[in-house]
Amino acid sequence: MIADLHEWVQAHRDDLLADLATYVGIETPSDDKEALATGLSWVDGWLRERLGPPETVRDVDGGRYGDIKVYDFPGSGEQPILLLGHYDTVWPLGTLADWPFTVDGDRATGPGIFDMKSGLVHAVWALRALDAAGLPRPAVRLVLNGDEEIGSPASRPVIEEAAAGTRATLVFEASADGAVKTARKGVGLFQVHTTGVEAHAGLDPAKGASAVDELARAILALHGLADPAAGTTVNVGVITGGTRQNVIAGAASGEIDVRVSSAAEAARIDAGLAALKAHDPRAAVEVTGGWNRPVMERSEPIARLYELARDEAARLGVTLRECSVGGASDGNFVAALGHPVLDGFGAVGDGAHARHEHISVEGMMERTALAAAVLHRLAG
Image (cartoon, rainbow, N blue to C red):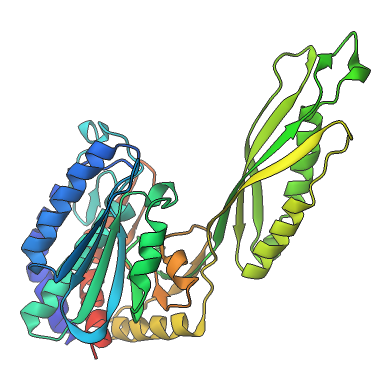
């Protein structure tokens, strides 16, 4: 069966590439509401053309961010399979002017092609392959959001609600060198703010309490919370503070990125942040922010879903590896609810968020056939 699906996909190679070329040729930066609306409008029409009319469509206004659409397409089974994908990219308007969609042998490139426009093309053509083969496909619920690259502030509750009543989730984010992702770190985005007492650094130094000094002490404490062996990293990546060289600083702040591999480590980091105190009694330390995405831990349901996909890949003659990565995705939200999630089902390539972003065309055909086989298995 899977060989026939792969053959059918290969026969439609030009059609897949044509769809991908059009999609990559529509710029959808996360911070441009108008451009996002244009991109989502095209995707909506394309989905209806390729898959037929959905049973239901839910439109959610993203406010200042990209809007969200939730599609339910018919198929077997009372509980649908959730498919996750985002249509926003990190690339600003105008990037296409000097970096258009290009195919050179097995390499296709263009802004957003790897992260993650190719993945949506895989998902759609996988469903088409099943229809063409006359094979059952499961009912699917497809969520498309336009704010994933900036943390999914508007779409998170929509994704969590859409996950209710589903059996499994496939995330069509890019692969990790071909491997699917069965674990992702949780991400915390915090800010540390320190306040002190301003004074003349030369005339009245004793009257001042330096916010910069407090921030420096806090940074050392924060970096001390890191535990690489446990998969925990802490990075204070941006700092600001003070007004002039000869003024003892009255305010300073730092921006913190935290990555953890377990809920226990997240709790330990929370305790460490809460314990930050000012060294000088005249100063103060405050931490704001929170956990942007929960941890996606490799649970038994996730392991079983991976094994199903690995078996189908073997029938295709492919060794499907699994991995854990430091980056997070919308799959983290669903996994935290206890649902089985398989992430990284999208492109085989490299260069996310970089000018060498590209995909393998053969990998695209292979991955589409694999997605079709997995979805067929999930229809049973």
